[in-house]
Length: 159
Image 1 (tube, helix red, strand yellow):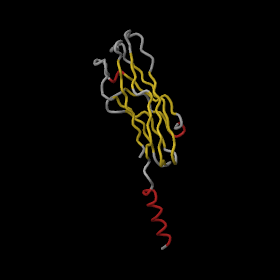
Image 2 (cartoon, rainbow, N blue to C red):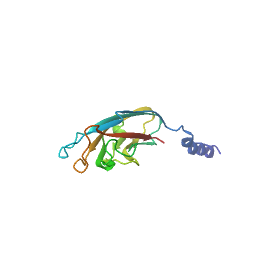
Image 3 (cartoon, one colour):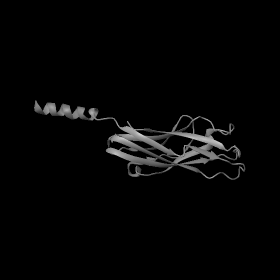
Image 4 (cartoon, rainbow, N blue to C red):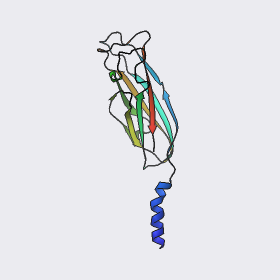
């Protein structure tokens, strides 16, 4: 009887653990601007740094970093589609040994995965460096004044 009770408690214990909580999510900068008056010269990639804290982490749980353009258009450049931009996770900071960057993706208004990984136990800081490139400046020259602006929204999922 004692062994059966122990097995029941062991099966229920994972379900009783606290959910992971995202304490904060910081992005710098949240908007990037591009000018490309000469289509033969693509502008330099814009960079952003993202950091987030997860508390009640567990090594059995994952985290996912996503990005989407919000609004789903390029400000000041209505003829430039979101697909003219490529975004990629350039590197992971504290999360490097517990996660990996996804490949480059064309930006969309529906969201794309930039990186995924395993949570660490307890409360931990995670970070990523992101690069945004205006890749199709030959077909869609950017405006010079005011510059094309792109607002990116990042989300972290940590079940």
